[in-house]
Image (cartoon, protein in one colour):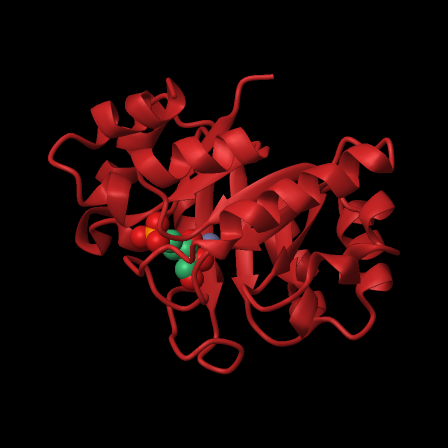
Length: 216
Ligand code: DX5
Ligand code: ZN
């Protein structure tokens, strides 16, 4: 199956969000990636549910919501209310991950579990069968435009192997430092979905950049 591209709105021009979302609508992007930060789980604050609500009537791509917050289980109703397709929670933020994953699905969304760069994939051993997607962070979450962590390529390959060895169809998304070079290597390692923030929104021609990522 052809890989998916999920531009991250974090690097968009916040003064012209409607224009940016309409650009994504017209593009070859598959999903729109939305980064919510709380200044506690990560050392930065981005935007919250009022922004997602504002985007909702304009956005025609499935919303891929990435919660970089403590206690993400508290906000399942809010994420469901904006019509999100995918809700990603961090492994490191969930004490009762199995319960949280079940609640996300009961709310009608796909469930994604996110791992920070230092978190081993072996910790997914007993939850992998219940999740729709694993989101591997290839930078430390909190900011756009950071340098890609090389180890992520090998980590992606090992996760792919783990998924195949269990006979599962769990998708792998990778987030952070994605450009045409790192994207190629991540796809070869088995990534299914690539998030790209600054590489898309800071490009001189974002539509063309998305097309190039999609055509890899
Ligand atoms: C980082 C966010 C990313 C971010 C990626 O904490 O989760 O989604 O937007 O930005 P780039 O692609 O610029 O590394
Ligand atoms: Zn993200």
